[in-house]
Image (cartoon, helix red, strand yellow):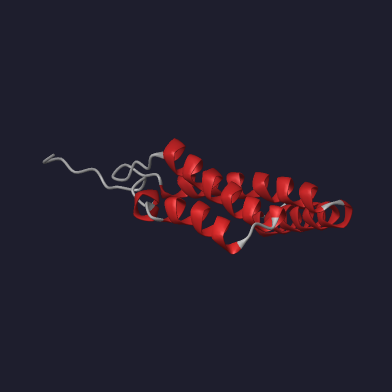
Length: 109
């Protein structure tokens, strides 16, 4: 089987699983999408890893998990706008730190 067909079958099965989760319950969908998001982050770090770039995979996955959970909390619990500000301001102020896990090797430091 070619690489194209293997990826097509995998993608269609993921779409089917997510749609089934959405059909049954929004919490099941959120949990399934969380698993897909974490697997996507791990795949991203596997792709960008090279001899000159060593991403901090655990920090990046942790940052992605925190970001996903914070957005899910705001969406599913339906918080007021004042509470949203109290949650999102501390979470999004350090957003540049989320991009630090991918740093090239610097020999002079």
